[in-house]
Image 1 (cartoon, rainbow, N blue to C red):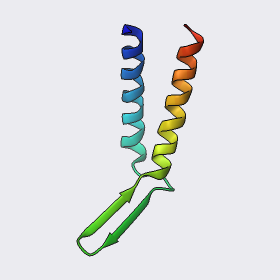
Image 2 (image 1 turned 120 degrees about the vertical axis):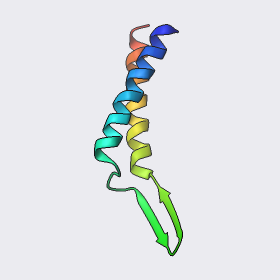
Image 3 (image 1 turned 30 degrees about the horizontal axis):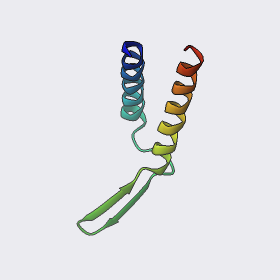
Image 4 (image 1 turned 90 degrees about the vertical axis):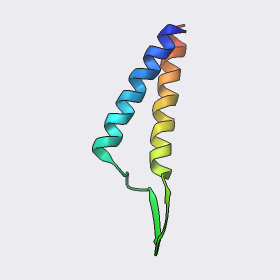
Length: 63
């Protein structure tokens, strides 16, 4: 269980750094109407999903 938390922590740090430098990915939708704004991070969600899926797949191979 300890290894899982270490790997998840490293993954969150990497995702945080990527998110900081890239910001909004192409494919994310922003709708602005007056004082109202809605942000749909579609592409960001897909990238995070792929990264986490690969991470858990690799962790599963080492068990």
